[in-house]
Figure 1 (cartoon, helix red, strand yellow):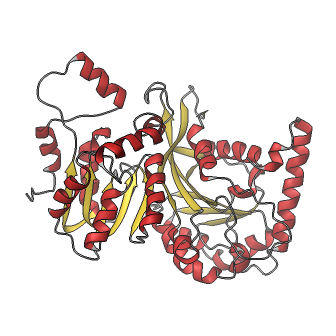
Figure 2 (cartoon, one colour; figure 1 turned 30 degrees about the horizontal axis):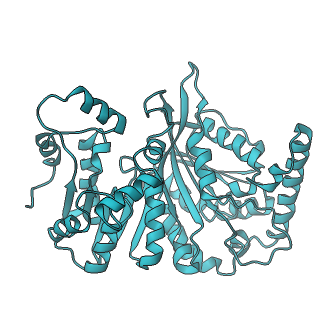
Figure 3 (cartoon, rainbow, N blue to C red; figure 1 turned 180 degrees about the vertical axis):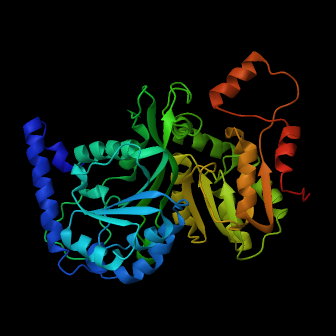
Length: 444
């Protein structure tokens, strides 16, 4: 929580507090917008160096925007407006500092698919279900807690069903090195943002259909990790989806179900005690070595680990074969633990992110190997997932999967109840064979 909200309780006082916050924010940015430079925008003397690496990194995380209606909030001088205009059908770029808006208009006004607005986003109004993609970079930390809650609900209303929201924030502390006489910014924790976006549920359509946000990905901005050793630059990509009561065993999202049930922090430690340090799947290090040996990994190859758990297999591959590994897991608890272990391992070639593999996108031919251990039992439409894997692999790339399967015989009531409680979708080995035969050859 921000102190501006903790210190005030009455309605009138809250309104006065918000006015004071708006005035403070205006004064802060008037002080840091005199020249309209990238250094002022980022409040950092190394802004040009950071932008050179950060811009392509952030853009690589965005979905396909061809023909999309994009709303860019906190657009500043247009660092991201320029590339967004080349990718999208139309971009509405909004900032509350007039000098920044004018600089953006000067640089990007020649594009026929651009609209520039000078506005306070807390007072901005857009038609419901009118936007395909909302992009925000360093904006939400300039809102009070009450403003943030209200504004998040507004953004959900503006997005069409299936629309996407991307935002990036400085968590815990500031990122730039500029001297500041005062700093009204609210540096929330990653967990606070997570709770806000995953707990939201709104009626945004006639007929009472409720909608919420599902996490597509959440990760640290690697440019800041590598250049400034800053682990607190976090970005999120969320999808607006319908909510159906009772589908996730009483939780809003499947991720919440996983993190509060099977993959609670306590259960993760139990699994690790059973399977070995760094592992939460059957066989631990010995089975990992046996399976990884089948891949004939070469230094410099890129590996995607879907359902990476707490990272033991990824560290093993990077240490012993010199490969680059990206580990994905939908469980926040798993990825948090993996990132903690990564600090000790000191392996920059291994990265982790919270991601839904059924929604995450990568360019074609991004990976030499896709590796997945005891994870796909959580996914219903396995064939579509395998088709995605096929597109992400380079020609001749390899897919290695281990998973829990079921037999051909009918299930007992007790087993049916167990599978339902766990949220599993079990296939027989023959069903798996049919799914994986699409575009793949058996290499063993």
